[in-house]
View 1: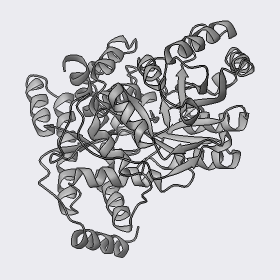
View 2: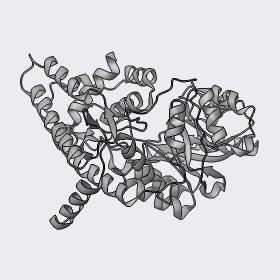
View 3: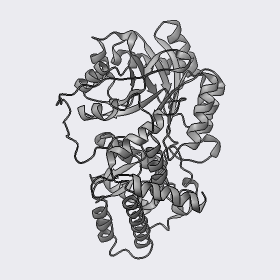
View 4: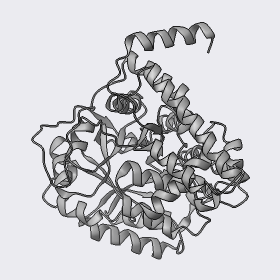
Length: 444
């Protein structure tokens, strides 16, 4: 970017953008669901009298199914799911590990099944035989209380070799021959521990596209992390593969961030050296990000969130954006964006946020810093668990996942020299974010 172009864009932002409210908090990455403080909130099961309607449907690749541009990524309240279906949302994503298949099945029993595209997912672990995978898939069918699944995905496929798992494909072919399955898919949002660049998200998903047996993909893609995802989307377009997105909003609001940093300071008051240096680095970045947000008036959380989602919706290679629907406010938040596109002003604001605050987003499906960690901490996995807690409202799930983590946890990061931060090409204060995540996932 030339200086003149940068100055023109900065002047445009200062003069044209309208900021709402004071910042008051720091901004961190990973939020799929944000509310402005002025928004009315509802509890699960408590309905607010509003009218919602999906305005656009897109063809899901070779499946030829017309899916709503806004899809369901995670939902746990049957009343909310019912209203989602009433609004026209017809893409429902689930997984064996989500714990909501039975709820989804109960709600779908009274609906026209042919008008709804249901996806669920299985992790490939332990028993990879045809019989083992087939048994698990049949359990999904039972929980979903349906005669067939529209798409069954390999859940978070971490390695290219897993794409060709014979037991999985044999099981899928049998289910298809029985009329119990229509399509096969694959998802990826980061390896448990990053070791080989050839196993990165884009490499795995492009290999799956070239394999030819996968009809639908679920991947991480957003305005900050758009390069690798864009390559996957391009190949999917060429191969006529359906595309569904997650992690579309990298703008996360961490409440009481200043207070958290102060608490971290107190925790480290008797720990000299590395811990204090980590806090200082993080605080410096936070102050710079705050100053940038104020200068360019990027502090309207709702408008920034909407712009982030419109960025994804504006890509013609995207078929549906999967959002976490936690309550009835989520319907108002997401369904209202159906059929919309990114405006020029929003493009400018997203570009400004990426420039000034992008270093506070720990990229999903990344892990480039992990090979240099002397203690083997799975950075991307822990930050993903923290995302579940902070952004998706899956607090218990996130804490259980973290408690079950067999790899070293982020408490090991307190006295480290911070090699991960030095290795991060995006300038993310990785060590500080991990330390915060450990506090949240352990004792929240």
